[in-house]
Image 1 (cartoon, rainbow over the protein chains, first blue to last red):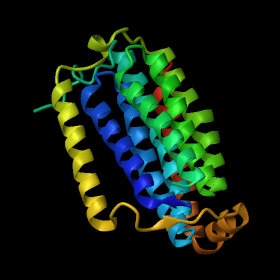
Image 2: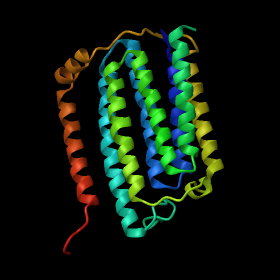
Image 3: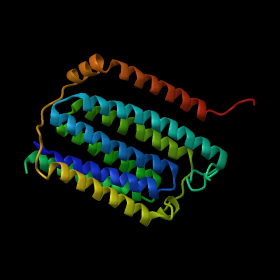
Image 4: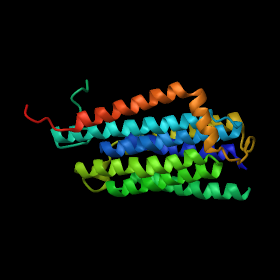
Length: 100
Length: 166
């Protein structure tokens, strides 16, 4: 048996590392990778609680989150490649056309 | 501490180190390979917890498909080498926000559970049970997710293909 707070602590660590990556990275592909870390932290919580309560809903939801993450990465990378083709850069600092 | 907890702590340490390297590596391809280690250790933790189906799906989809997609994305775009070129100027502020979120979450967790209260019993959640749960209770959300995935794939193709002629 595993104490639940250990799982929650690891998941919180992964989430804050992901937040740091999203805020500190300038390359758009690396920002997407950090978002994946945050999604994984959420999934870890879902699976941990699902195994704690013996209720499969959490695991089904984790599967849905994985599917949505795959869709998000596909669309995100398509947009990144489009930006690169038009502007020769994928630095999120320089893509500021819509910034007020 | 039980032996499963030792195994969990080892996997969690590997995952944490790999995740830190993902957000600090100076080379984008190395960051993607560290992402494999981080996601793989999370998948191994799912297997350790007894969620075998989610664990193998994690390894297949994340390590097998999403990281390959990232590597293709890196291949098609040009990225400089070095942390200073890949990070922006507000690294200190970002670290501060990350640590603040970690502190807040840990405070909330130990406020809600304490440090040793609920113990997760490690019993297998079989693929059969998950399949029944998906196709009995969650058929409609499942179909919605498949539709979203289809729309995303078509959208990605439409976005990234070159316009010919016009």
